[in-house]
Length: 400
Image 1 (tube, rainbow, N blue to C red):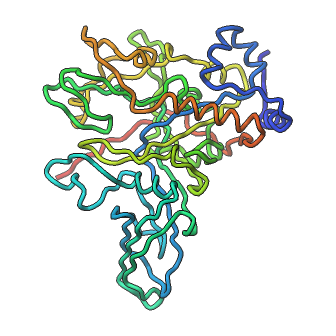
Image 2 (image 1 turned 135 degrees about the vertical axis):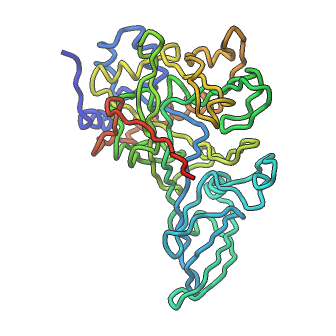
Image 3 (image 1 turned 60 degrees about the vertical axis):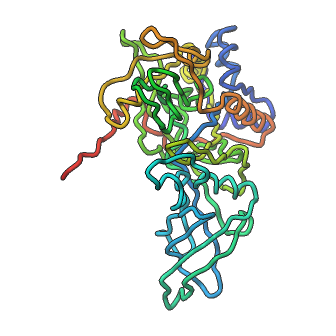
């Protein structure tokens, strides 16, 4: 009978300094060397990491009250609008929000200089951020206008709440058309001139627990350089399997996480404002998840390598914006990371939008926290839906 562990047993080993913790990269070699069964008996936790653009991110801010008090109905932070339909001095700043005078609002969206993700980075960096707010005025909130500046330390709360992070496995994006296109996957050159991908492969958190056997509501994680939590499945959470032409499983796809943490704990090197030419602003997020090795089956997935994990190749000149046609096949992360792949007999250079060295650093940081006893694992109060849940996405029907 294989090994069976509990969260309580693993946490007891962490507290005593006896837990064996390996990164998702390190455990691959361990399993190759001595096999699944022996490794599962030895290893308590496998750590993962990813550092890439995650558009569905943002922060809830509570500014505190002015004198006289004000119900803020419109708010700008460094000229970037924030959503105010929450409460008097609460606002939600989305990572992809851009200033009203940004080039995106002209006929040609050129170089994006600054957006919501950059404001979040500035706040975490301790910089002063200009706050402007307007109101219609009420008896209890008579003030109608305010202009001031704030720092992260000066406001009451700043809660990073990202509705869709840690995308399980994203596309390898290409362009078969005759013109350059500008996308959230970066600038794609015509006629298969390049290929971009944005998943860390063998370090990617949700690819190492594709069944969601350990990840759920309440899972403690590395988020933005601090400690955060999984609070729900992310939006567009449609976990499933990638299969080759013979029906063999060659990867997973579609799972996402909603995550939350205290922005005041976080660090600017793990929350970076990012811009894509011709598309817009976003936030590059550092995310890491520990996977408790409760049994041998969990380790089997946690030890999958780049050679065994694949991404779909998608033509962004066709599937986006038209959403027609299938993908152009599958490619392994080992091939993507080699710097070139072959599509229809053509050699295509590849480049990542996410940082593998940073993902490795996150996995090692999380490993260090656990080994020092500074980070205990949390057992989810409810696991997230896995591939067997049969979830499918819906398409908006346009009615005239």
